[in-house]
Length: 355
Image 1 (cartoon, rainbow, N blue to C red):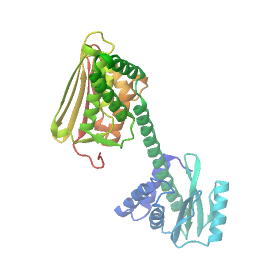
Image 2 (image 1 turned 180 degrees about the vertical axis):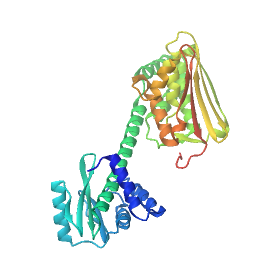
Image 3 (image 1 turned 135 degrees about the vertical axis):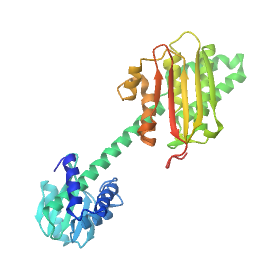
Image 4 (image 1 turned 90 degrees about the vertical axis):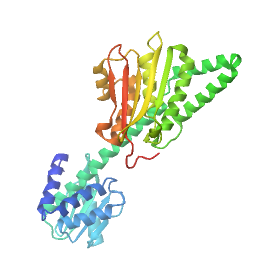
């Protein structure tokens, strides 16, 4: 079967082989959209109808390896179809001659299903229809793989609670139980809130208000651990509090500022978190006056090169780009011994993004 690039060309040829009309191009696009969920998706019969229109066949059927054929138009005799499909799937070769042809659908070097064409149709059109289907199936698999990878990274981010931070926080709380029981109680509630927000089963999206609450909880614990070494300023404009954002996009940036910016220093440091509206966008910045980093390293991190201590930064950048588009990734401003400023910019409203 042809490779991805050849399939693209054949799909284009299929569109041109008809009237060359806008309707033909729309039909090709709809076939691709309808096959995003594969040959087991709910739109398979609609795909068969569109392919029948494109090829002019009396009938067209599609199926994966386990489901019955989904016909559009005039079905061929059942026994003959079963024998033909069985031959095709076991020999991994085209079989039949007009008016009945079956073509195996190969996706990523394996047979994913079969296309059956009933009627007097040019073999070139049959091949092009099969190529269109295989291209759509391959795209769907690639998109699904990318989504699964993003979700895996997100789960890893949720589970990435520093044992060092947990030990230090609990040690501070334990030391205050006798000397300052009220503060110990407040910090224990903060710790429980931090764990709940980091690990609980949330939806995909939350609000800026919830993200800022999580930041305040985390910083309260860090102030107890670091004492006078940590100073904090948090400012958020009321008009952005209800803006929906992907869950857990701000807290990792604050953690990164403290762990990699301030903790390596011996003197006191400042973390500033700001949220405000700029036109139709919500802009949030996390800034520290810590040790900073080489701008080249920051660029490499956001480009996806491996830095085990920067999983949170990379994950947030990828998820922002996935949800809002390439223009909405993180912006990192940094230099050695000059601190780091990370900026998140998201639309105040984005279709499909709801807490």
